[in-house]
Each structure stands twice: as C-alpha cells, then as structure tokens.
Length: 113
Length: 115
Image (cartoon, rainbow over all chains, first blue to last red; front, side, top):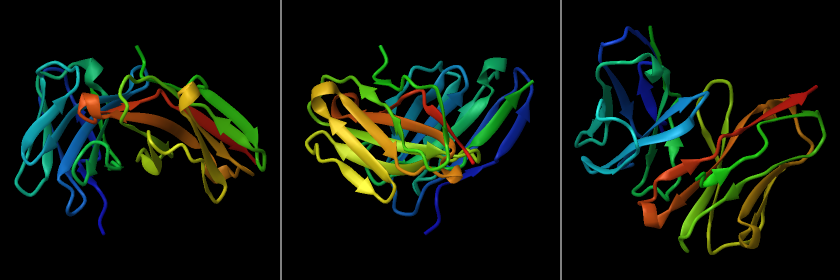
C-alpha cells in the first residue's frame, strides 16, 4: 500500500509569490491534515480536511489556505510569501478522525528568498 | 500554554545504553489519545505508538517500551540497548476530542546514539 505522497519535495520561491503544495493520502484515508515545521516553532497544525470540508484550523493567517478533492487528495496554498514561511510542510492522512493514527508524508521543504 | 512538554531538547547516549524520553501533557478532556513519532533525518514522521486515555497499561515492543501514568500526566518512552539507527528526533503528541482531535506536538527530543 502506497504511503502519503507529497509533491514537490523542494521549492524555492521569492517573497510575494504564491505556492501550491500537493498531498495524496493513503488509499482509503479520508482525513488530511497539514503541519508547518520550523526550528523555532516546531510542529504547528495548519488545518484538517475531511470529505472536502475544512474541519479544523490552526492559528495561521488567511494567506494559508487549502482544499480537498473528492478523491481525498489535498492541496495547500500560501499566497504573498514571506521569509518566515520557509519551513518543512508536512501532510498527514488518517482514516476518519484526528484521533486515528496519522501517517505522514516526507514533506515539502519550502525556501522563501 | 503548552499542551505537550518534552523537556529534554537533546540527549546523547553511547550505543547499548538505555534511554528514556520524557513527555508530559496537559488536558481537561477525559477522552484523549497520546502518540509517539520518530523523525529521522529524511524528515518523514514515523508512527511508533498510540495510547488512549482509558488504557494505562504499559506497552513493550521489542526494544521500545512506554510508560503511561495519568496520575502524573506523563507518557514516557524508553529505548533499551540503544542502537545508532535510533538516532532521530522523537515527538510526543496529544489528540483531544474536545478540540476536534487536532494533534498537538511537543517540541521534540533529539536523540544521538554514539557508536
């Protein structure tokens, strides 16, 4: 069974640009969560999607958004990039809810110059 | 306030030593789940264990063992006879029903096993 796939693995952008990251969950998993990981703030929850609906949202500005498609694949978008958005973005999928085991992808490392 | 505290930022041990990683959590919920994940240098978080709030039994899996104590709100992780491959960052996480099962991660403990 394939794991969680995140693309691309690496991205370099400049300030002010926007970026879209993609996540394909494990087959059969309907919940997708996104996390930002930085050395200073650690792992921070961005949002969770279930059945194409955002079910939970962390404390991030509106520049961070996401969506989920009918096949459970998810994308997150960051607009007007800032230097502080440089981070490892991790996607996790689980069967139904957040209390189920979350399985993580390898992440997308975003560098904002 | 931090919901999950991992006070040990970095630990170094010599191979074959035992090591315990501490995790203290805070919740008002009666139904919650605790997790441990391992993050090797490749970056992907690898699931190790899940424990629910109603099951205080300790668990052993090979060289790994977990001690869950509700009385002290702790969920500690012990690696017996550590190996170089155990070198990684270990995260403890909490999921509560009251907050929609969002995961709260600790800041992680970086473990280095020296050969």
